[in-house]
Length: 141
Image 1 (tube, one colour):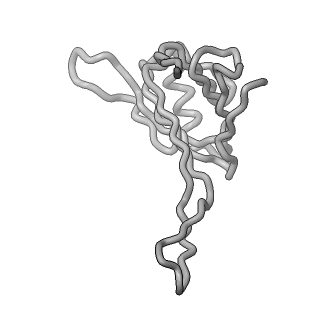
Image 2 (tube, rainbow, N blue to C red):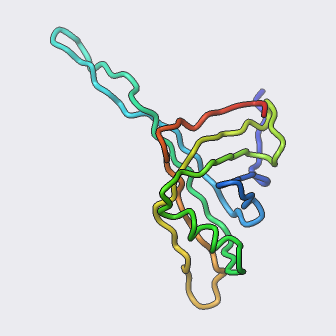
Image 3 (tube, helix red, strand yellow):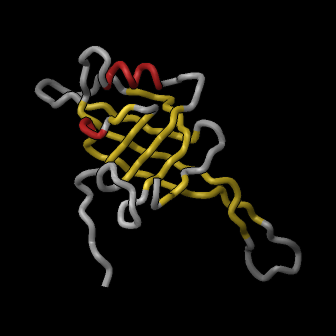
């Protein structure tokens, strides 16, 4: 029987900075461009996977303190160079039961201020492929 897991200690490092303590939610998606190869004589469509396309959607508690999350996001958003990404479902230790996903990514849009009166200040952003590198799964460092 499969072992169910509750996501309650995800780990996210962006550009060398551990932002886990701000993390409210995270969603990693990996897909592939579909390339159709159908030719005359086929009875059905025929497709193969093309290039990988991945994204990591992140929601964090905002922190405007000097040198913390808001300033880090400002530095990463629209940066010329891609930043290293490490994502794990359960804490910093990598294992077969806690694989790490790594790549180099970019942030194109930041929402530094979002909410209504009395709301908790949060920030949402999406990390996308930054240099043609796939999002790689590994079970050891």
